[in-house]
Image (spheres, each protein chain N blue to C red):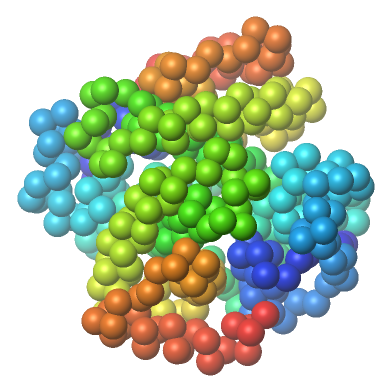
Length: 203
Length: 203
């Protein structure tokens, strides 16, 4: 089993944090995306969508998607559970992981890719107006997430889950999108300090 | 347990098809989105994100997200499995359900909402250039999906799963986005006829 990984990108980081929280160590193959290694053979044959991370199982099966890779390890290494423990909790974790993705992580990526000059040749067509529209969506979602964090220490109650991982990576990607978390979102800021104190956060 | 549902919208349809495939019947509360009922109390209090579908459990827990609702029923009604059967299959279904969502269903919604005149007051700012950019993404993804359908009768091998449901709803939403499936994607067209022959497809 091999994990094709790269530093700095958001989705590979989600998987690194997830594996650290599970205490799973696997062989890693570094891919240099700054040098465009993911756009060429042999990587582009492994994943024609040309994105990272990618997990290749011992039988050759290719799992080329971050949450799908996390799901695989949730099934093979159930402890600690990071997708919830019973039907209700699993549904709530799925809901919040997706809310955070569509309300924060994906909009942060769009804001970055459609505004930053360095992305002009990678995001074609680059549409700054669309990038700006995403900043509004993010601010509105952050207020909603702050409210949710009034219910417990983590995004879903009192257990750390994949929803926290997606939210942490989303917040850290706001720097690229040039969006700041408003000071009045006190619960969100406390939660951020809490998840950042975990050893996995530095990965 | 109650499902807040509405006809015509893509995400509520995903849940209706999923429940029909599981042979699960539950109480439904219709919400008239054409009349803006989802934007007002009492629905807007139930789901401050003001979107459908929403499942309310008997203990009052609110599951306000389509895939999360499906996940809940996968856990409580495991047969037939629609999210995969073992760790590898579960990872592949998760991967393809997400690939189809990000490559087809979400871009189809963006193309519709950012181009169609009827959406001008709902999608603010409406950015036609972004809508058009999504059409390109869709066509490229459809060719990739057609290739995948060379490996079996369904999106993931020979079992019908939630990835097929997302793809079916995505294809049907292409009408709104004014995108046609190219005639040369023969495997995709055969798959479409196959999933449309299931009784759940008319929901």
